[in-house]
Image 1: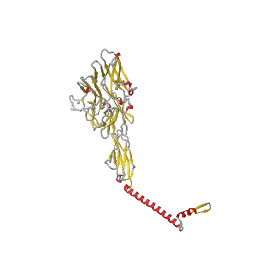
Image 2: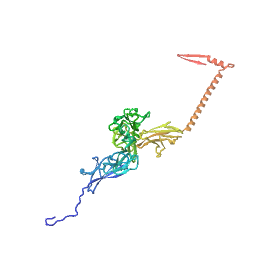
Image 3: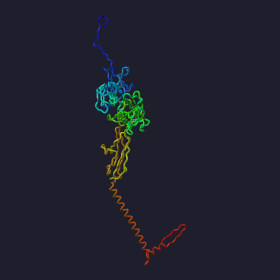
Image 4: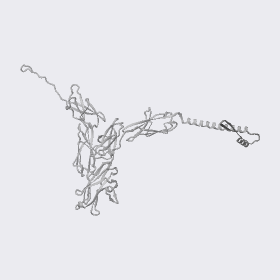
Length: 525
């Protein structure tokens, strides 16, 4: 506007100022890699500098960032100099929390609602599975089962997944196993199937009921058993296999009994029953069927994600409760917690898993083949026509497979730990190597085989035979010559009409001794 009254002008439309809110966009590159991009709601002027944070620490600059799929880390970006305006962090689902209503133990015919929730950004999607089933039971955060039956009992797990990764949590649902007779005797087991880790502690529990008119003081005995002796249940506390490992906590006023087994072994896997009897002879009751206990050791399963990455999973033969936490060790050093572990293919390290608090019960380690040891029989130098056996052995877990190659050849000569070459020729000479391979990696070792002087076996036998015959003939000729000379010598010294015996006697008895200085020579003639 000017100093003249009413003289003014407004430029319209004007300049729109937008403040860019930053967001991290996630795009999958392949099965193992993600690409994170720092995205603004408008195009920034100049050459903005993006900075990436991982768990609150600067790691890189640039508009994009590659990260491995399944990472549990938190990534965010901001414009250089504007830390307070950083983007919300993106991260894979944390371990889901699962709730059940009304409870995880219910009578048949009831209805149960499962709810799954996991902290994640981007927001997670949810899928429900039942143990040992490949197809999902339901999708969504809430899963409802109506008209619950014994067939519904089992382990269910909720899998939370977003673009960054996935995580799951397990819940056990059971129908209340009630065994009741007509006259009011009853045993109610809290759980009918229990999975326990080898070396851990397990607790089995039950409630029991007897007919009206019986009092706690009337209960004479109560115990758990797996075997019978002389047709009667045998108290587990008297079994030598459980010595020092079993104790009971029984409460008469609430009619319940707990059995705790410590340091469980795989041999403890069995069906356990509870029995009780009164002070009246023959009055007793056993809850049957009982509780099935499965004791599992841990194994590491190896699965190839792609050409460069493997996924190790800590596996048990039955589903353990969420109480247990898996821990991973690399060359005997703790590196991570969780049921799975990504490792690079070809690693020479040794990986094992265990349950926190039970280090002594860790799984056997998995590792790639060490350098193979190669032996040859009878030797690495041989004559043509010989047979040679090569044996390859490498320390590895899982067990290695073996393949034999000859130098400068792409196709393998043989597979298996033993490789036999029959009718060896000069063409077989050269460097052979054995390659040992398992899911973790591969290793090889070389052996050189040669034919001795390039002479075949048949020719060598002919030469040996020829020289043997020549030697025998020379010896016979020498013997003949000596015999002839001796015969001539005897003939020249024989007088007319003198017998050979007389000549031999005369020769033996005639001696002349010559002496010169200190030396003497005895001449027999």
